[in-house]
Image (cartoon, rainbow, N blue to C red):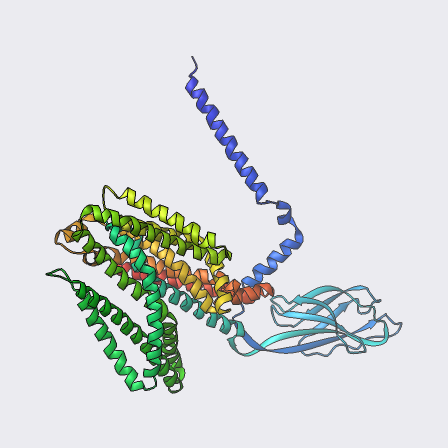
Length: 603
């Protein structure tokens, strides 16, 4: 008796095979597979020409000397007339037949030419204007043969068939293409290096926020979270105001370089001391109200001093770089580097001040929230959480709405203010209701999801698109390419780093926590030793990727060798393009070898 299960299996296998065939058949149709194009003779000729050009990169050149060989010809043939024999110089031309009618086909042969040499055949009438007939290459014996059609230039006088060969003379030298390729490939490597370096510096700390095993255990009372959300925008505003005030003071100090240098040394020390006084590591007694006010003032002053120090550092770097540049000669780029760092620092001081101000106010609000939770009855704290959470939610929703309104140019107050306030207040109230049983918010897990979402969005945008945006912002050149690569690399490396943190062994974590270490100490002593080798490996791999990605970014004006490669391809200069392709292949191979050596030694 037949097995019904086996029959069903056969039917299912047949259906699966049919489905696969249908999918691939549709795929062939969607990709427009057309073998007629492959068999097309013009396309074959074009392919051969491109492949031969790519196989001979334009790297070496010689001075060339043209050698002219002439042979007399009669058009048309004349009875009783004869052409004088060609001059003997080691080369000779013959035409079969020796005379012909206009537009007739004749065979021209050359003897005694250099081996494998390109020869240009021309017809020279009495007007001495050369009419090109054909290009032909001599064989290994210096012989060539070509069938050409004579022009319609009848003349009773003797005319000329001319062969011009261009031969190399002198010593070889690098072509302009080779020098430009070397310059651009160096630019590409360092563009990728700068992007990878700065991206790594930002991706390493951000990766800890995207590691679930480190963040999911971080909780905070709802009171502290709400106060922190309310204090954050105030901290941003305070930091910006502090930056503007510090810039005025820095402008007065920088009139005297010595005074600015003293201020650069003294202000960070005072700021650090004020921070230690405002945020002591241990407290024996609870601080009084006056002490809290003093601590807040100290933190504000420390932020002002820190911002002032940054402005002074930025100004001194620019002054020192511009002063030293004429004296450093070929090393003037070092002075330019310090001056540029000063400009970047001055450009980013407002952002840094905003971060300082936010951090200071958030820490104070966090301590205030813990203090209220300890000192007030539980019922009062829960009641207080309602307006705090609703205010924090409304404020956060308004900020998000304002960002969206900037992109979409909304001006309606209901969409930018009142509706977001209502939605945010409701969300805050829901958060209060959710935390009634347990007065704690998992801020670590929320930070994890937000960080992961940002990284996923940045990784979804191709560096090519980012480069187009940055080219509009900073102009065509490698700076735009470095910014695009750096932004994409931050997201890519942070994801790889965070996944490595999530896969570390939990034993060292538990051991360090058992000693009473705080979170920062746990990361330093239990996490960092386990992630250094893979971090090095990922960073080298990303540098390799950025070198190759720089080629594509150059196609949209992002600098590097890709910009030069695109120009040569558009001009159909495939020999020059072959030089750039060869340089890319050499650099990628060298990067692979270097990264393997580093991984072998440190990983």
